[in-house]
Length: 142
Image (tube, rainbow, N blue to C red; front, side, top):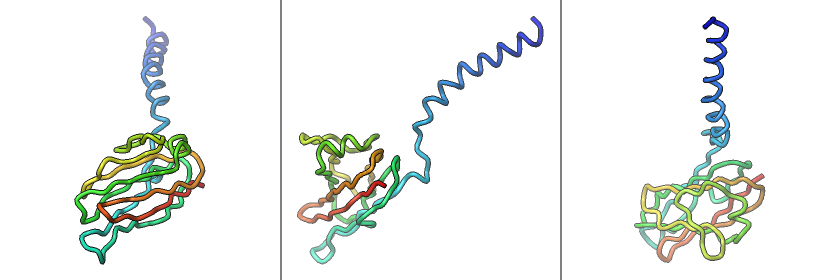
């Protein structure tokens, strides 16, 4: 076998294995496309649940991560925007679909996170509850 035929076989094999990897990796999220909402508070009536930031302005395809730093045993993140929420997000992590077609987390304990990727423009309101305490937040996708 001559060098040219051998070289073409090697190029062909590389393309067979590399092209599928490149095609599946195009949906990967970069670190600059991630924003964090911190959940603080709890522990007493004088220390209610609070979100930092309360309103988050992001671009399409940004992943929002909620991180629980509250001194409550567990919190829950609830979107109430109905179908518009489920149509405009992808890749839920620790979120599940509620009966009214929007995302709700199971209880998130101290130190845990949940995340959603926002793929369409819009304004999405949510609340974070922890026992009798709650905070409201907003995600604005430009």
